[in-house]
Image (cartoon, rainbow, N blue to C red; front, side, top):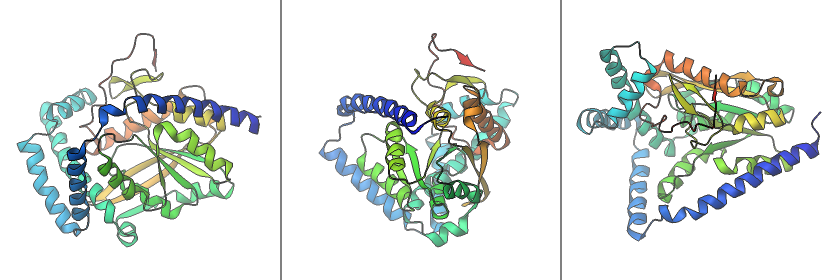
Length: 333
């Protein structure tokens, strides 16, 4: 049985590793330096976004319709990347079918972008009207026992609005994210949008420190992250993802295996324009009993299953497969 001392040693190792990453990132900070004019411009743009966020929904979606035409047909935003990603993911589909999915993706992408801006001024009444949650009772049952939980999400449908789930949970949600360097104004805009409901945005390289701090104060947490993000090529976990080799963050599995925290899966389904249903379901309730790598494999296969059901809602514009697997790192199957 794991003792409190063992848990402290585990977190001490993770915290030390995070400190080294923090030190490395601080050395690279000059690369992202904002001079006076860049900082001023970014503040102006953030101010424009704040203004847009206060517009009514019918105007928001009117802007989205306009940008759809511009993004898809005029600037053809990342068209090559989108078509390539879809072609690899669905080799059985014709070019006509691929283009049809791409068209639906562009439509959703524009809605998602405007909805992300709208989150800044979204109020509780609007959130209750547009987002329904299932499975919060399961998470709250762990809170009543003083248990921490890990929730794995994905970049599918609208993940930004899901920060409102904090309204219905007893846990403190730690929303893991990659810091946006070189644009402090926009990062501040996003963090304020996400944290207004009570959750806390935590940089990915400081997550263990955050968990340990709340544990020390006796406050149960939910580590919430979209685990399909792209880590460095040196990540020790590589597997086939939508017919291509891809790396994944192994941190969630390591924490779950060491601490025994149950893992849940978060799925968002679009039920109408600007309306979503979010369901949280158990993925691994006893992670210590699982074999090494099985947790991450289970998550990846679940993500693939959902993408194949509703491909137009995945983030195809992201360069997810930009890394090449190092020869010394095996492919997990």
